Length: 425
Image (cartoon, rainbow, N blue to C red; front, side, top):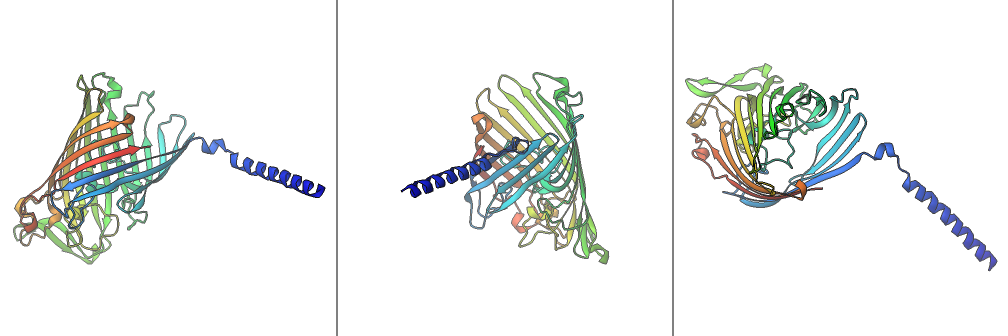
């Protein structure tokens, strides 16, 4: 009996000691490395109804064949961030359309004397214009404009960045800038050529300098992008005349294989916001022009996709196009209510050299990738729970120019109705 008591006592002491060791191991906290860690994310779920089935669309991607309505998870994003003294890091993953992908993986160092200059490395937002760096959660419209989605399909790229952002108490707080050297392949971590692309932007926030009560938002900016896209064939196409017919001229030369096409964008933007008894009236505007390499439309590449920036090496002939486009977004808050009304217009012409019936004309070498589009977007949404939740209704009216291509002889039926619910945590 005494042995049993001794054995039980010994086991109890060992158990308590072991529990103490485990407990101590579990509660060890390294404050310097944990205290500034944060976790956040958001979900965007929606229902869409299109005018017709299987349409190409910039509202959440193309509709599958025989489908004109769908429920979908537009975005489901999780972000982990860390900030301590002069260093910060951000890691984001996104579930989108049956695909898990990295959206941010970025480390940044900020100097501590002026707290103005930061340098970073990794996958991050491309510094260009207004809409590209804008959070998809806070967009007034359902999606970025066709213009931006064509030039920057991922909004992100892998490279090195320098950011200039003076603190609010600085006399230079009205100016900010960002410059980057990038792969140019978007979220694709594997670059497909050795050329690196440059992107830069400078923004002026006059509202901070003027401090006008009725005009809390007043700013303008300029942007520039200069890059290259590698050719994998001996033929490249340029705008010109074939026996008097406007279109593309073929340039066939062995030097073209491994050669490069220009990818150059020049942009200006402006924004203004006016407060009144009605609420805050805000107008954003951006115009971009330049040179955009693309391919011809085909059975596997629809028209709008053929002028998008490449994420991988194009295997077919490169078409060198000169483009322009712009958008404006008007957003109106209604007093102190959570209701917002939105109107947006965007225009994108992938090839300014040809238009209308010139596209698709015999011997022009033009395709669906040269068709211009305009989109009117109408929307109403409720910002709830201090802006962390939104219930929105959008309707996009999409118009394409009439061409000599049979399937685009007139405007196709590709308007889209979107009912969205989103939540941020």
